[in-house]
Image (cartoon, rainbow, N blue to C red):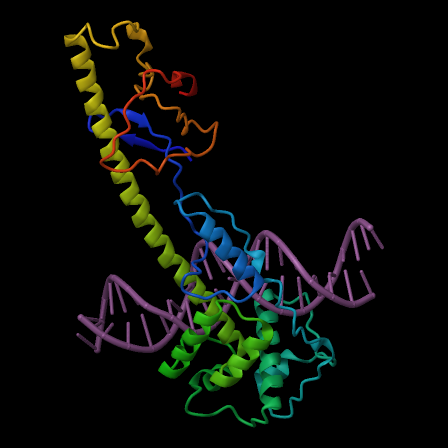
Length: 300
DNA sequence: CCGTATAGTCCAGTTACGTCA
DNA sequence: GTTGACGTAACTGGACTATAC
């Protein structure tokens, strides 16, 4: 993207900065294990500059989520226990879920279905234990008001450990983790979603700070260049016999419209993409104008 | 092979609850 | 005891992909 910096003299100077927020998910915190994560890591590694990377497809984690796609249409929940919420949900004989229901209801029904299957599998008659206040409290209020439930330290730390290993879960991993934590798979899923969102937010903040610093650096660089330009102009006027004497004054490549110095950049006008050297200007190492270079005004 | 339905997952945004100063 | 800020669990809706028919 183009980037304009207003220098101390309120001059708009197109410096052609190709900056952008890398909003891609930060993989630095999580060692990638699956193919999708590897792809992200590659992308990230090759974008060392702060550059526009918006638009990464979010569909990159779908490669393995059907590994354990249990066909639950044939699952008949055993609802012998008089759990009213569940009884209401699964009136369909084969356990299928009608599409016409609101999505949230569908999701909840499906989730409860999973829980039932899960707990039956575990031969857990009643989900009442000290470590899982979540499950216990979630099923006895018939969903009238959602309750905010806090995870225990042990649960949180185990989730964190798993997140460090892989930021996404396949169904198998989700089931296993839920079983281990005595949570519903949906809760594990939600936790991972929220955790990814937090990580991304954090990374965005870091990116913002970085871009801010880049902007400040470039602004300062621009200010220095303007100062040097003024000095150069002054010295040229005072020394008409200088080496530049034979050049007509008009060949000074100061763009008349934007007063930009030459150098072949031309970025920032939206026509040629990000500047190639937008961030390669080393601070304290000003790039002096080369009078023999092509006039850049055409790009302005 | 193509179109459609369905299921599962993701993300961005939002809501609402629990905690704490 | 009340209140506002904050963290975060949970929800919503849209998008996407895979699979079955």
